[in-house]
Length: 256
Image (tube, rainbow, N blue to C red; front, side, top):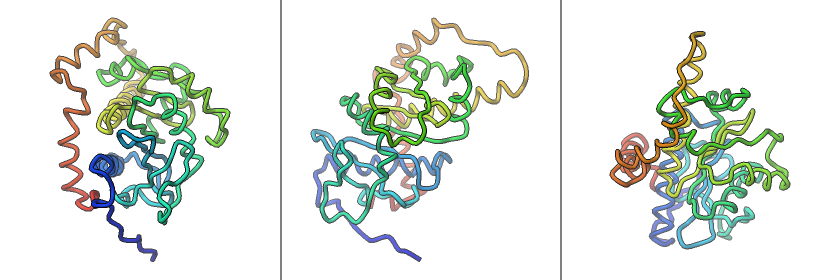
């Protein structure tokens, strides 16, 4: 059995980079805890504050094996920065992330999943429908990108960026979903809302009954309402400390 090398970068990187590593590793473990992981595929990437460098998972590791120290530091082209790094990344998987990080420099984190629910809703012409409170948050900032096969074509990056625009939620037709956030916690909460919205939609449609759609006015005003609920903070800022505690209880090695 192959054993993962034991590394600890806590005292070898800046405090800002270490905190980003801890948050990102926690997000990978949350993917496992919510059943959103896909063997060794899909990714979450995060920009290290005050740098042009990104962190992403090492290709070949299961998400329950991701730690703060074994995340890989790369540039926007996917080049590994640390010469002594013993891991590789998945270039195909990074295409989507590099495109989004290039277009949305102000957003720190990008999540991408291949869950059954997001693929199913992304694969119907109507896409996400206003059937639940979860869908309101997503529909207030939703975009779509048509399937172009495996994401290995650099030409696709411009089309993906154009389709994304200013949205924080994207359904990738026949493929899955992506969310953005100014923090790792924000990107996670966006994906949580989108995933729950897709799950509810599939359950409603499975009843065969006539659904009730929420009006557009609710969608248009949902951000202001959420701001009141979270007293000026984002949903990620409010929920993230509890998520870190949850990960620490279930996966105490994540921040090593």
